Amino acid sequence: MEPEVEDKRITLEEAVKLIPDGAHLGWGGFGYQRPPMAFSHELVRQNKRNLTLYTCGSEIDIDILAGAGVATRFELAFFGIEGIGLAPNLQRRIREGKVEIEDYTNLAMALRFLGGALGVPFMPVKSMLGTDLITKSKFREKKAVVINCPFTGEPVCLVPSI
Image 1 (spheres, one colour):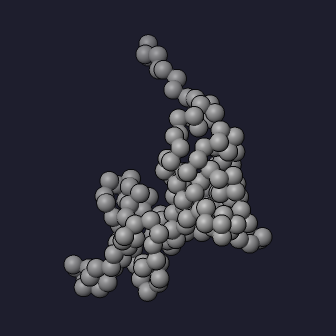
Image 2 (cartoon, rainbow, N blue to C red):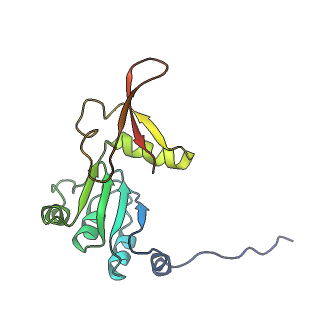
């Protein structure tokens, strides 16, 4: 006979109640594919504030959060609405100075998530070399660091893990 396993599932409403204002959230989906829309709406409904979101690329879901004042900081690689253009609420909040964006390449964001999962402080990425993404930072003194690879001597960019 198998031991009884405690059911640890909770409702979406209960899950969002556990998120404090000012929390940092990893955000899934990309574009119209699998964004956490119900989660976005529940964050708005519960009037959460000052969240930081980390995402490779999102659309309407983060536009809703920016427009409602739920999320005020974003570290991402893409934001817009496919076929329509830039996310209007996010653009408006940026112009008003109420939202901050830290921009990375798609690969750099994916590697930052991987670095966090691996428990390492940074990840190497070459896709940011030669861009101003390395030098333009709003959230930290060093957004990325370029070093010479100890094996090849070629430049490589290091980005912080999430």
